[in-house]
Image (cartoon, rainbow, N blue to C red):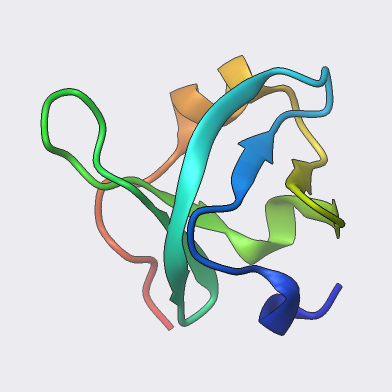
Amino acid sequence: MDANQIQPHMEVVGSNGQHFAIVDHVEGDAIKLTKDAQGQHHYLPLDWVANVDQVVHLNLPGDQAMRQWLTTPPAH
């Protein structure tokens, strides 16, 4: 997976096909997501990305990703 394939405003889906987020941009080794309803950004490690086509596909279900996502960028 090439992180350059991940573009702003791409949809993010879990391994179960569930849409749950939109990409803001790639920041270091993580995907920064657009703000949620509470105005909070979340981060997904690039290690969670299974593949990228028109959307970003994760290697774990969306609900699990939401339980484990970060609220600050991961340390490099």
